[in-house]
Amino acid sequence: MDNTIEDAIERDWKALSEVERNSTSLEQFTSKWLNELVDEGLPHFMNDFTRAALESEKRRNTIAEDIKQKWEVSRSSLLAFIEYCAEVGERAFDTDTLDALQYVMRKCHAKALQITREIMLLLDNGYPDAAMARWRTLHEVNVVSAFVKKHGLECATRFIHHQEIDRLKFLRKHKECSEELDWTPVLEANIEAQEKVQEELVELYGKSFKTPYGWAEAFTNHPAPNFATLSVNAGYGNWTSLYKASSYSIHSSYTGLVGFSVNPDLDENTWFVGQSSNGLSNPAQLLAISFSQVTVRTISLEQSSEKLPDLIALSRLLSEVTESLKAELR
Image (cartoon, rainbow, N blue to C red):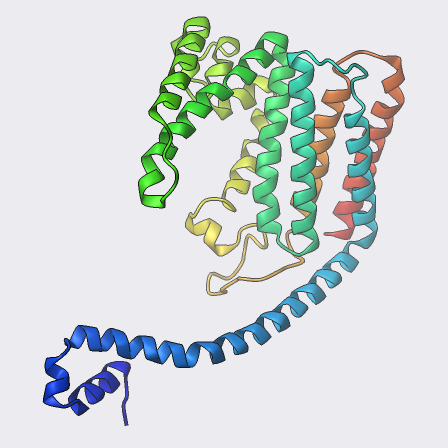
């Protein structure tokens, strides 16, 4: 009896006649042998794994329903709060023509809403680590929103113009990878045209504008600002610990592999690959806080007594929602 694939290949190779062995190489024979084995077995494997996938999906859906029931009351309140934030943010400006600052604030609110709804899907299905990872992006949007509003129209204009710097980086990277990835190559004329755009922006704003946060340099008194610089400037320096914790869910550090958000004391011998009702509290509360801050900042950009009821209601509802989440997801 063959103990390994190598034994089986060797057996069948020796069973060939001398003429047959002389007509092919061992490598060619091995390749043909393995492909025939896969051709014979793969349909059966796929049938088995298709059934397994359906059963796994049923189990995940069952777990998700159990998780929703665990925080049914606070979840309902949070969903209502999100929709309230969405509605008041979408009607923040009455004018059809937005200036640069209004435009950036509305863009930030729209992106924050999209991320918030993504986080809710992850929470509903029991993926707190992934929810924290998406909150990290929501926090970045929140900080940018706060920074741009603080520094006004000129800052918003630079922020918008900086997309041309990112576009040039993208074109260069696309060209660099196109051959290996079998992409349509970027025309050199397109890169040269974008380089010209960058040169004009550098002439307008200075050499540092080419850096990742060059659009913010003029408002920070820092020669090479980064996200931490923006955070402190915008009043979010004390959020560093939460931001760092969320990073474990994104990067491949050992802490991230263990499953930090689910349980900081998780046994390292546990191979956690599924859903959990643990760890939902932090991302749920953080999404409510961050999205409400983006929303309040957006609707209060223009002073109006008409917005005061919404501002008061948002503040009151945020307190109620976060307290409910603490109680139900403790």
